[in-house]
Image (cartoon, helix red, strand yellow):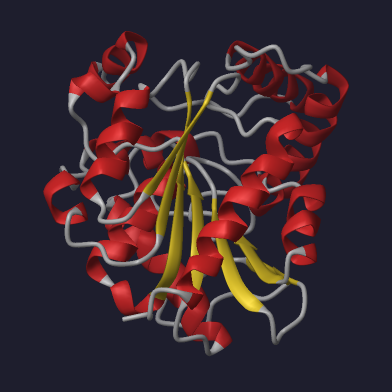
Length: 287
């Protein structure tokens, strides 16, 4: 798998599908690796005619680390992290791409659409917020954001796996099945591939510095779809409603039996929504 060749930031990425197909960059949530966009999900998008690009966020997987071993702040902003998408496009020689971002990835997509609209063909915002207004956040998230970040020590492999599974279980708030064996296998793969316990904290530090984007989103001109779960235990649906209201022509999908996780049972629906939005570029000239 290739790495970016632009300036001194090294981002690890992977490309799936036909080189001549429409490029689609998948931008994961905080502390996620490219494998968190599961192979089967990516295959569904490739089957729809996309050249799928997925990557390890900085401070995750095989990408560059920022700060020391115990550092809880990498010293960068979400907009800086969004620049990693541009580094990938430049490395691949692409002038623009479709974007689909989940959680922190949806915020990164917003920054790209605001600051670099010519690089964005369409944008799907999944489970994200347009700023840090407490009205967007569940009370637990407000409490976490107000706390002093602490370093996460590296755990032995089995303890780290159990910690991961416990977190995923706590986020499982829907009627869809929770496959604990699959989550455990996936956790093991993540840890063996690129374990960075403080990546989550460094991304959190960047998110706490993010500014409010709602007014600037009113100038976004790329075809946009906003997807949010009505059961999201972290981010309230109001955030999605206001985001879709702000972006001209944006479509809003509030999904009843969805929390913050991208549920496997809903993968075909996400793919349908992302694909339909990308095809709107045939109706809306790209800037």
